[in-house]
Image (tube, rainbow, N blue to C red):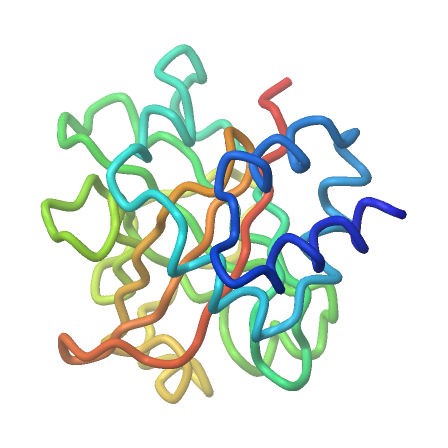
Length: 203
């Protein structure tokens, strides 16, 4: 079987084996890993959310401390929506003068006109003390600066972002060393919207 067939078979099991799924992601090459998340549908993402580890993920694991301020780290994404499902979340450590333990980031859309309509979807990420997930991606806050090649800063009332990102907080759980599963919340309520993230190793 192919890797995607193996993953689907594992997710179809009555009690999916989290360790075996993590092993499959980590044994894949970087390009295969991205393809695996891109071929995981909404049902598979919901299952991964249920079995993922909510505790063992932190901002220091996502963007290691040795990565300098405002140096981007890319996470390839696949969401559970019916259209425009591929994206990236790009994270960085904040400016050197910011002492808060947090990451800054935005949502990159490979479809340029879509990104122009929806806005950059800036956020601040930080370690969460909530049981739902180890890291919160908070769209209610935005960075005060950004890497030079990132888009202009706008809050999430900008253009169509008010209907997509405004008031939203995503929470992340660990699937494997490189792969995270996220779930959206708004107003403290969990939404039936999930997404997978696959990290490119810095450098």
